[in-house]
Amino acid sequence: MPKVKVAKKDLWIDMTPMCDMAFLLLDFFIMTSSFTAQEPVQVSTPSSVSEIKIPETNIMTVLIDKDGKVFFGIDGQDNRKDLLRKMGELNGIEFTDKELKTFSVLNLTGVPMNLMKPFLDLPKEQRDNPANNPGIPSDDSTNNEFKQWVSAARAINMKAKIAIKSDRSTPYKVIKNIMGTMQNLQENRYNLITSLEMSPDK
Amino acid sequence: MAEINTSGGDHGKKGKHKPKAKKVTVRVDMTPMVDLGFLLINFFMLTTSIIKPQTMEISVPSKEKSDNPPPIKNSLAITIIPGKDNTVYYYFGAPQNGKDPDIIKTDYSKNGLRKMLLDRNANVIAKVAELKKKNEAKQMNDSIYKKEAMRARADMNAPMVIIKATNSSTYSNLVDVLDEMQICNIGRYAIVDITAYDLKLVKDKGEALDAAETEQVNKL
Image (cartoon, each protein chain N blue to C red):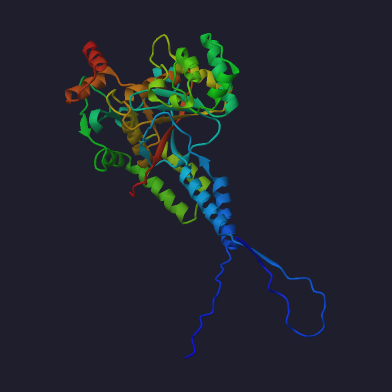
């Protein structure tokens, strides 16, 4: 009996178009995306029906966690350097170039000025430790550093909008204090950062 | 990975022997490259946030203004007082002839605060809904619609809401109330510091106050 011989066929799929597509998508994602900036504390924002988007530049962020710790940051690395230099002048501290550089990559700070120098000398991993981020002093006492931060940031960037990001369970007392401080500085417009919720049908 | 195919050409055939350049096809296996591409896509999809956070824009009166607030009609005023544990109190108007206004305790659900505001603001809501209908039917363009809706909301006879949060309420309570303003088309509202008088009203209603607030009430 003649044997049926199966022809040995080499199956070759051309992957080139698939490769093209993969890299096309990759390009798209790289172009459109912005990295999620890391925050020193986790906050879960309340939801609202508002649909206004927050701008990415010209913004100063006030982050308040659920225990009332206050963090402050502005955008732009050069702006941050200027900010720290200014804060140093106000508090009689001089920062080295290295310290300014370290500060310029932090998007939010929650360190009192007297602890700022040792904080900036810490290795990177330890700076994220909550114990090293006690929050900016913002009580209505003689030492209201939060007020200094806001006015210094305003002097650097006149156009910056103020974004307040806070946790759902932050007591209103803290918010009132922060808003009151900013009201004293003639800062009367804020953006409250919220997550999206569907508008109910009436 | 790469393969050079040299089987092309008409070797065994007779005929004129022309020196022909050998046909060489180079095939590169693209599979690993595709793997790499998708790996990177996955990485970028997971690490990035495409959705930008939403914001709610509020403006508060400047310090001088908030010390001397403009007078408003008693009949139009609604005072909302967010309290502890997601409760909320409200009353209409102001004390008259030494008589305290009725203070009502409610919550943030659909049938609580929102129902009251929708009832009170029915005129404006009807007007805005009408404008919206026109806009959707393309009888009105977006910019005119926005302007008109804003005008309708700023109606001088629409209720004016005063938000006075207690210390024990949370940030999410404040956002909830502001959200209700937007849902119920209330154009005129203000966030004001709570007074001792209001604290006393909610205390009589069974609200637990913190130490500083109790002191404020006791001074009254």
